[in-house]
Image 1 (cartoon, one colour):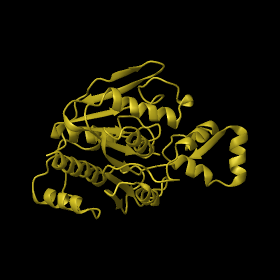
Image 2 (cartoon, helix red, strand yellow):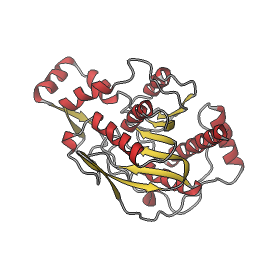
Image 3 (spheres, helix red, strand yellow):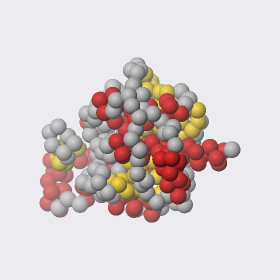
Image 4 (cartoon, one colour):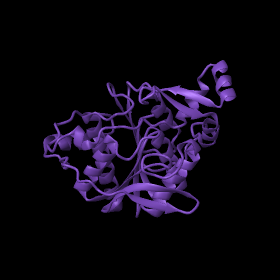
Amino acid sequence: MAGPGMASLGAWVPCRRWSKAAVFGFHRGLTALFKRKLEGTPRWLPACRQKTSVSFLSRPDLPNLAYKKLKGKSPGVIFIPGYISNMNGTKALAIEEFCKSLGHAYIRFDYSGVGNSDGNLEECTVGRWRKDVLSIIDDLAEGPQILVGSSLGGWLMFHAAIARPQKVVALIGIATAVDGLVTQFNQLPVEVKKEVEMKGVWAMPSRYSEDGVYHLQYSFIKEAEHHCLLHSPIPVNCPVRLLHGMKDDIIPWHTSIQVADRVVSADVDVILRKHSDHRMKEKADIQLLVYTIDDLIDKLSTVVN
């Protein structure tokens, strides 16, 4: 999963125009969108970010969640970060600037136990973070929403779409890690799994961690098993776009193919970038991401009209 410490947008790109992009993927609508972008002036020109204060969502009997909300038109966009990533990552900030340029509503937030949110990380589970996402949708979001999930966030966005089908109108997954942690654990040698069960902790190697490993409680893995989706059809009927880098050494790009096969919706596209890694935060990756959001906004606006 993408880890914490991503650079801010301000450090990533100055106040200037994007360079023109190549055409990615095979979706006719997205291809047409890229053609339109290449022929004319881009709708979105990144601007210098202005600092906004952090707000908190108070929840009885649950940790308060830190978030930042941009008011605007529907559909709104919600960014769901990766494993222990916070709301200040490159992708989260880039999407905010894009939504601001279009006048669309946008929300980014920190999970319980992560970033500025309350809670103890060691007590967190996939189920608790699922509740976090639903709290954001139920208590903060107004009207229809496009969910953008990165890595673990891609897993959680499917759960949100299943739980709130009337409010979630489209999904965009970035290196979507549906069942990811459970799959990785199950692929370990039998003796290693027995050792983890005995010690109660799995030291999962990761180059995205400062220590080179993430220390996951065995109980975290067992709880996550209750939220696996790939064992049966995924009852999501809205448009789904899955972006994945073929150089991803954390979640293989074949996972997105498997997810696409399981999703019930007929409107599903998988878009692969040959040289992108798990984080997908290079300029061309971000460009593809915001163009994909723009394409879905156009599609949904056409349906409404």
